[in-house]
Amino acid sequence: MAATDYKDYYAVLGVNKTATADDIKKAFRKLARKYHPDVNPGNQDAEARFKEVNEAYEVLSDPEKRQKYDQFGQYWKQAGGGWPGGGSSPNVDFGNFDFSQYGSFDDFINELLGRFGSPGAGPSPGAGRQTYNYRTTPGGPGFGDFGGFGGFGDTATAPTQDSEAAIALTLREAFQGVQKRLNLGSEVIDVRIPPGAKPGSRIRVKGKGPASPYNQQRGDLYLVVNIQSHPFFQFEGDNLVCEVPIAPDEAVLGAQIEIPTPDGSVTMNVPAGVRAGQSLRLRGKGWPNPKGGRSDQIVKIAIASPKELSPQEREYYEKIRAIRSFNPRSQIQSMQL
Image (cartoon, rainbow, N blue to C red):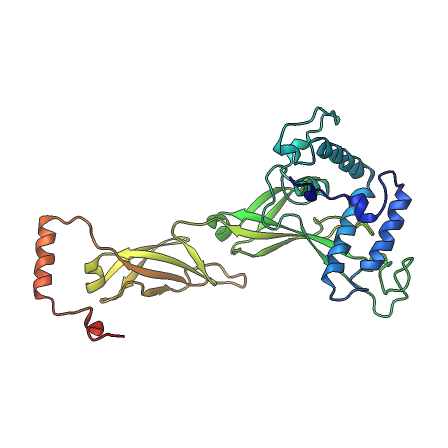
């Protein structure tokens, strides 16, 4: 890991490593007042700085978290400024705690702060991402002991922190719904994923986000659904899409064929003269709708020509070619630039 990957939370708050809890609190309050979104509306740089200050205070204001963070900093430094897990481990005793289990600094911090994820797994999409909800009291007297800005010091209106993490599901799990056990670092919880989750769906787990450094109230955890690819079914908007091959004679004459759906096979009528790439619709056989019912399953037709023919099949194909009146290229015979 490059040296820039390690966050020096003491430098973020502008204090030295021997700072007392009061020093850290005073520094935090000063910076929080300076960068708070109510003071800097629409300023993304200030919002990013505010989040960084919050994260630093969340770590350094807790004696146990601060101790482990300090130990990690020593480990990182003695590993030569590179990532501990990426090279040889320095000969340091940290109370039998193995810092090399973490794949990145973010992995370490995510577990330290109880965010969703697992050490050594690397950053997953959305893991450790925090969003902040700011609620202010109109006409309030000020930030409490911060002074001058509405609602900041009120416990009831203090900012809460939400976290966001990715969760991977199979198509079957997403279709039927599933209960998943998640390791949040500080606790293990069971979460019920309702039927019909789609890629990008956000599942709210109330009160399982990180604790606010202001009042220790926990925000919410939002699980962003990733669905593993399936060899047959894909999503197209709200509908499911599949590609089904048919034989040339079925395309010409029409046929009744069996089509897999998420909850079993159904019989579909293929009209005579169907074209390759044409879409047919199975109504109500697609993805569950949270409001009830299901979307449609779209069946895209592919005409599969046989690579091997029996002598009799070849004979009949040759007879068809000899008597065929249909010219599929009639529309392009006069085509030119």
